[in-house]
Length: 234
Image 1 (cartoon, rainbow, N blue to C red):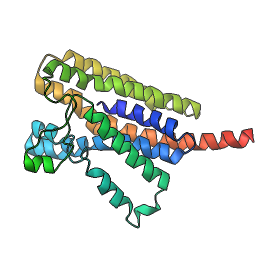
Image 2 (cartoon, rainbow, N blue to C red):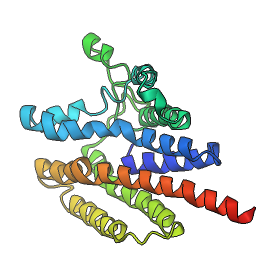
Image 3 (cartoon, rainbow, N blue to C red):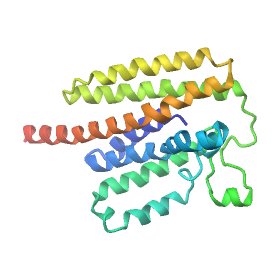
Image 4 (cartoon, rainbow, N blue to C red):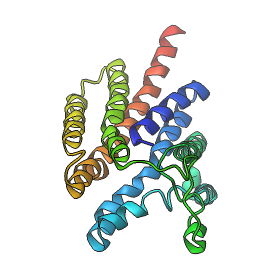
């Protein structure tokens, strides 16, 4: 599933399930995006050392396995990390679980039982397993990543306006996203390597980590806005 869609689900689910708990909302959003951060080491380390196909194969493995949840739970039990707000920790775990479930429902399979699946030769998991997905559809969905980011960006932009933040950066992101989508669309039926570079590299190295940070800052401001609103009404 597109990372922008995961972000939208994280925001919506947080506001629906925890309307009065800003920390859990923030954790849920970050958790819903976090598993896809595996594209960063894939782009920076695996691709230069082992090639682009190896980098693609490493995506949706160690960060998308069901074993990541008990591992994170144990990590949060460490003394230093126990200082993190309990709502933030709880929301993060819920967000990661939600991300994994959504990806199982997506057409691109994930290594749900990694590393056991790698050791035992098990197939990756998707409800669409066994269905032949044409290359053009896979590429179209990769290009559509930037449409999903655009919708996600629009949600962040509305949050910024409500908080009185005049972030020109968000408008720049929006134009950049639609430009990359248009460029990827032009390359849809052209050179495979060039399409992959256009469709994946910007999200991995620039857009994805930047918008994770923007979302965190905006949710922090959302908490302050709600607190001031409550004080005014009382």
